[in-house]
Length: 296
Image (cartoon, helix red, strand yellow):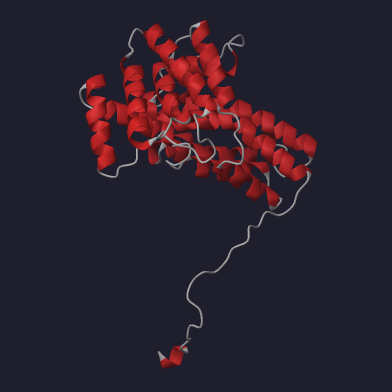
């Protein structure tokens, strides 16, 4: 299945399919008891970074078997960087990526987490709930925003000096710039504070502050013009870029970290379940006339 989905879909499309297929080999797939859910959660958290790395190896070399052997001393973060870049990461680099995984692990009732809980609330299985969550994460207004941020930075001509005129023109034309504003935080997203610091540290480690400085300039211009502050996706983009992660894998990396949060929510939902069914209110026209088919 791996070569087919790699050839046929985007990274998130492929991974959504691959995660769904994991249930066919999971011995606890049909069991939603607390112990079985715990075992499935551990497997999914361990499987997700390997799936992303195998996907990347398959599309770049045509063979997922070309992955470097994992190093037990590196942990999830270090081994993922090893398998994506082909080289053992520097200790501080692995440490920074591990912090990123923690920062993205869970965050209130966001769209993908809510999706997972709605599916779990029907007493569907964990793999179905996680597959649905990945579908929600793919959207550019959720997990896809970090990729959009980096693509924007890469597309701006003129480096740091080109940022302000580009941003002002984009905002003046009604264009939305991804990575700013948050439905919960009216001040700065506290996760962005940590990621800004990590972006600068990695820029200095790499000896290239270009994209960090472009991000800071964009941050200031958007604040001046729109009064919006960066959210978690904004500085995550340059952090992942400096880590050597391909841009189109940014959202799958988000899924790697969020897997622990999603599975925890599914476990919690199954422990004390109640069907989630929001109310709706019809606000359309009333007293409409119906014409029988034979009279139409």
